[in-house]
Image (cartoon, rainbow, N blue to C red):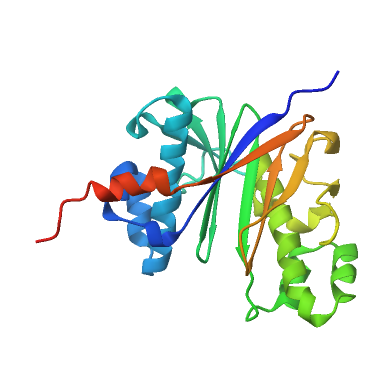
Length: 255
């Protein structure tokens, strides 16, 4: 029997779409965190990402953005630590049962949505200024480092960020995050169809229940989507402008 595909939406936005009206969609904790960012670019990325998450969930759940709530779950904590709530956001209230993942880097903001199955999205800006060789020690497994080292220098940075986006999308989907260890996950090298070769973190699912694919984030970026399901995945790519623009249009004129 052929399984019905799992539908997943990936919404793309830009920090340039930030507007004071978006802050009204955030809860008190989110606004407090937004205010702690020192750089305007970081504040814009955060505001767009978290406002978009609420708008996407509200549209899917058929409720207002103010009704959307989140429970943050961290598999590494037992709840007794004196820390700010953190971990993967799980939609609650009318949006319960939906699964969400958020990522932002440079001029890209991504929000992925699925129903009933864990999802993870990651986008990375390719930077020639970063020490790829040094980062590879923390991100790549030995066989992956060897494959990266064999590439021409002009291809190594793009390949590294392909690896990174694929792995982080997987660990976001499982809810473990990168603190579980990116080197504990091995994926196919860039240039081959994205696939998990091994996954040795405590929360790793069976590999036949993992769907991994690349996303087109534009020149200078690498992105990936992971969905934890044995079924095929149908991805719909959405432009966030229709959701975000009406809010900015409601702003009162200056003066």
